[in-house]
Amino acid sequence: MSTILHSQDAPAQDQRPDVLAHVAGNVRALRTERGFSQDGLAAQAGVSRRMISGIESGEANVSLSTLDRLAQALGVSFSRLVRPPDMRDNSRIDSLAWRGQSLDSRAILLGTVPAAREAELWTWSLAAGETYSAQADAADWHEMLFVMEGMLTVEREGADPRKVVAGDFLIFTSDRPYFFANHESGPVRFVRNVVF
Image (cartoon, rainbow, N blue to C red; front, top):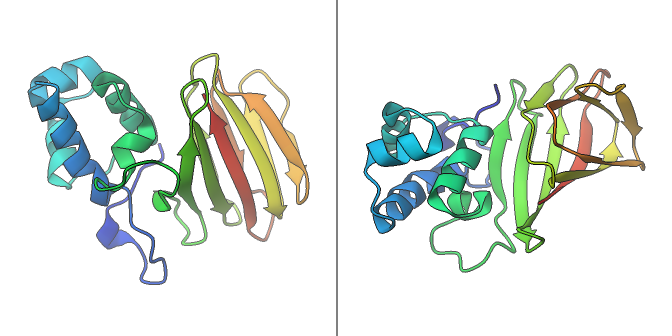
């Protein structure tokens, strides 16, 4: 399972804020604003109270899918949950949201714009041999990928793997589990739009 790492785990050369630097305060403020106890939010989101406590204290690593469930339970978008608390809109979030085993594997949520609900713009990189797996989204969610360097392999449950080379793109509905993989010897860099 992919996780968001604590900001103190981020390497010195990456100056972008880690979304966990914002999530703790945002979850606490939104939970309080909506009148939820930690137990109430945990039940609504389908996670443990211990997880809610760990998130609010900044001591828990958390999966992106758990943050999606928390956002839904709080009635906000994923980007509202992870953006800096003083930001008025989502046009420039520019925060580290996922880190792989290698320092060359990371996802940065650049910003979002409105769609039916929202559209997210990300830059991603995967080091050689690295993968990122994702759970199924709702039927109206889409992924739009553009590879800038290397070759990205996209595997979706029930579909043949697709190899996307630099300069090419892939658009698909993310209504079933999928994963991104770099089976090459060098890094792959790509732009990812999530539209929902």
